[in-house]
Image (cartoon, rainbow, N blue to C red; front, top):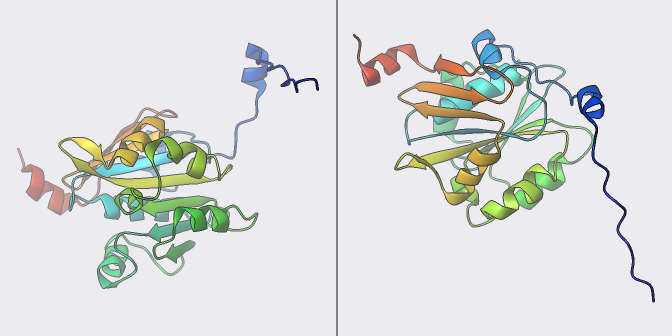
Length: 216
């Protein structure tokens, strides 16, 4: 019996590369964030990380709000905190209103996330808070294939902790390697590194940031 031959791979020419139409571009309502991030495609993943109690969730909620619109629906999976009073209070502090197009979910397994959000209709931007909850469910090697690549045409925003100056847990370190936009949160400020734009910094809470960093 003859062996099956794999089809020959064909590379792209430079013209093919430049003529390729980009995926849908993410609309960012906040002008500071929009300038720092640049014209980002609605695909792949972004990554938010930092020490505990430094403003990660608040920044993630601010991002969820500025990315949500009639044309750009957002899902936020609060796997670590759930949807209890402390999380609801955080939503209020972040300025989330009932008009914002955000669907809120409690913990969902990785399998359920992929099954739910691979359907044609539904949010195309998905926040997963926090990777610590999923460290026994998905290995670093599986992150791209099992989650990111399994949801093509979706932007996945992953949130992780920080320990000893590095993203935590191991799956969060992998997220930092494959993310196209990274937000490092410390002391109610976030530095932004983006493959699409110049990057920059945003203050999450001016008053509390001043208390953390001090004033000159």
